[in-house]
Image 1: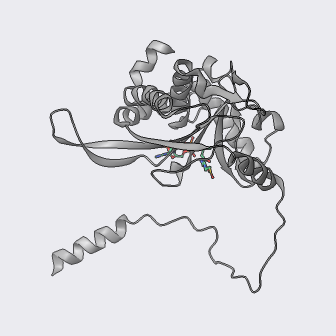
Image 2: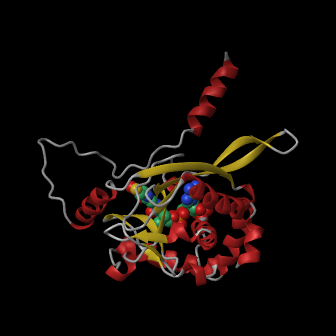
Image 3: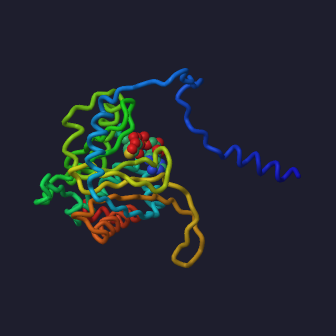
Length: 261
Ligand code: CAO
């Protein structure tokens, strides 16, 4: 009947089409060999090293409804100061506040596995999708920066990444990494630690989903999923869960960050 037809049309319209790279896909006429070079070569090396680490995963969902509301307001203020404010700078700051409480997450294990080095600086690497492939530029000394300063750094690293202008200094020295694959999609993932770091967090796409409030009523909630991987030689599950709980509290109630900024 006609009501069913309407429902079908609506659901077709709701489909989000993937972004195509070009109007026409060129099919290969024969196999093509591409030498592994540049950033991919570095990735082969670091990821092969990484898989020697006994990883464990820990995932959680954060109800970021209040963060979404706050960011809408803050984004407009930042825009007036010529800064693009996405969720990332706030999430990076929340991670840094969590690292203050759980410094072992910001440590590294030496090559002989005899010493754990607690790093003084929170140098947070951000996995970045660039025309040259995956790069992980680093926002240095996040512990001393405001959310707006973190946003400025991220904007500038993103611009340089897109132009292929990131220097060695900008892609080294990371002590903890965050990967926002949620910009493309996805919920849970299994990120791979960047040695000599001991932990990494990956964000899924913020989705609007039904959840229960304290009175048991169904409410509309913005849900961010996060997946951590950690080096189980030095980090245990409880430590990772406690760190995640700090981030969860800050991101579910962004005003609580005021006390620690
Ligand atoms: N869920 C919902 N919306 C999101 C989102 C998420 N997880 N992440 C970003 N967005 C939104 C932003 O808020 C922004 O919206 P507005 O226009 O309203 O401000 C928009 O999407 C574009 O965001 P952005 O491009 O500015 O990205 P960002 O600051 O959030 O992240 C960066 C920057 C560099 C992390 C991201 O561009 C990127 O490259 N991610 C890919 C990481 C990756 O490849 N990981 C895999 C590593 S393992 O192979």
